[in-house]
Image 1: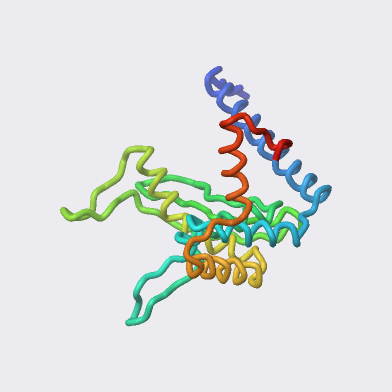
Image 2: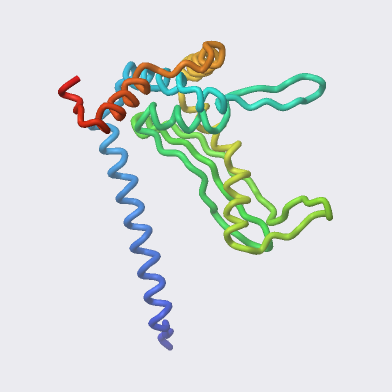
Length: 210
C-alpha cells in the first residue's frame, strides 16, 4: 500500500481551516451561553427601540416604498431592522457566502435568537453581473462581488430579522418613526442632554457640576 504525500503548504492550509472552524464553533457556543446567562430585559429593549426611533435620522430611513401594480408598497427598511436587532439583543444575524462557482455566488441570510434558538434562514443565488446602460456587465473584481452579494442579501436579511423580532415590537417601532416625522423632527431629550453636556464641557463645566 502506498502512502500519499501531502505538501507542507497544503498541511498548513488544512490546519488553518480546522483552527478557524474550531474557533468559530467556540464563539457560537460562547454566544449561546452568554445569552442564557444574561437574558434580554424585554421592557428595556422595547424602550431602547422606541428611543432610537425618536431620532430624526433613523425615522427618515425607517421605511422603504416602491410602486407596484398601481399601488405603493411600504415596509420596514433594513436600517430599521438593524436597529431592532441591536436593541433587542442576544440575536445573531448576517449574510454569508456559502460557495462561489461559475460566476454565481450561493449565499445565506440568517437571524438567530440565541435565547430560544429560533432561527430564520434564506438561501439565495447571485449572478456576478450588473445591469448597465450598455447592457449586462460581468463582475470579476472580488470587492465588487462582495458588494453585489451584500446588496442582494440586505432584503433577505431584513426579512429574517423581522421574522424573529415580535411583530408588535416592529409595529410599535414603525409607529414611533411616523410620529417622529410628524413632530417636526424634534430631538429626543437624551440627545439634547448629551449635546448640552458637550457644550458645557468645552468651557470647563463637568457633569457633576450640572
